[in-house]
Image 1 (cartoon, rainbow, N blue to C red):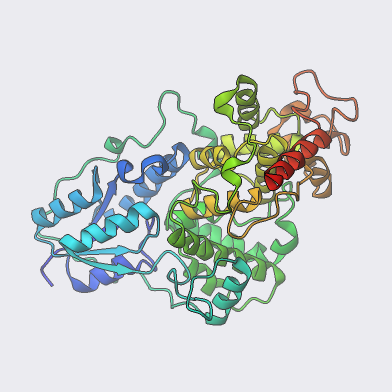
Image 2: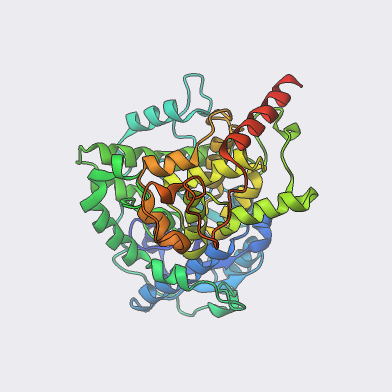
Length: 463
């Protein structure tokens, strides 16, 4: 019991239902460690908004541990090398960690296990990736049969309590400071809107869960209404492991509402996304379906006007109020309403005919809940390029979507140029002849964008 136990933290910044913490606490004095390894992740190192959240989540966990006379050891650099060095510094022989499925973490886990005893736990999802397979023993590729198989396996494991005691090591290894990790924006500091929108940390996640307990019953219908916004907003808390899906499932397991059934399927979608990236590690960067590398995308790197179109989408200046409201909400808060995410993604891919990967990269940098598996799976679902995806020829009509789902109040909040307009004019001010001078014309007409997309798709299929 005197040999220090290292807990390797990544996206699992909590104490309750944290299997790696729990296992380490049973074995000896606990040394929690977080290593910022940007190089391993390459082009999917934490984006700007995620780095902001990570800073505050680490601060929250550090405060929680401090109240138990413990602390987090912070390092930056190669995670494998740092863990080996820490083991030598402290005399630790075992690393405890929750299993991660991003390709760079799977590689790192393999290298750590070659050098040290690595005990991996399942603490990020309802079930471990690969827990369910088809009748032939292969991974599921399609969500619906995957979901049915997971539902048949319910319940998931029981949630674990916080460790009763965190025994302290005789001495602590050297640590960087949180400021040394340089996670916060400074020149300029664009994060005030995010800070106003969110509370970060394990306690905040539990507070949000309590709020959601009162509203989940409405979710099946209300999730599509941006102006009402009865969505859980649990995604960043889940992504950074401030709460586990197992905790959420057990909170709601006795509910019978359609809202809970719908939300449960979205928890299962998180598991599905991890199964996809385990089978196809480059999925957020490579189209799954054949032929799409030759599709007639309008490449922003090869034309000034196309680059301007991408920038107009990024800044919420497309002339489509529902799209612009969503993109501005994203920039201001680090998050976007789920229904609007689909509309905005479809608009980039189909109206502007810009490769889905440009959208994936923008969301990766601007979302506080940017997740390697979910982000890639969702973008390929919208684009029609994925293993399980919507058909490309199903093109969302943002103007009618805006009116159908009563987005007027949402638009007024995030597009103040239109705040004085009433429905139905606010959904399409250009068509109704009341577009304010400081709001842009449509970047492309809906009919023209739709026809261009269908023509490009036909050329690819005929090639």
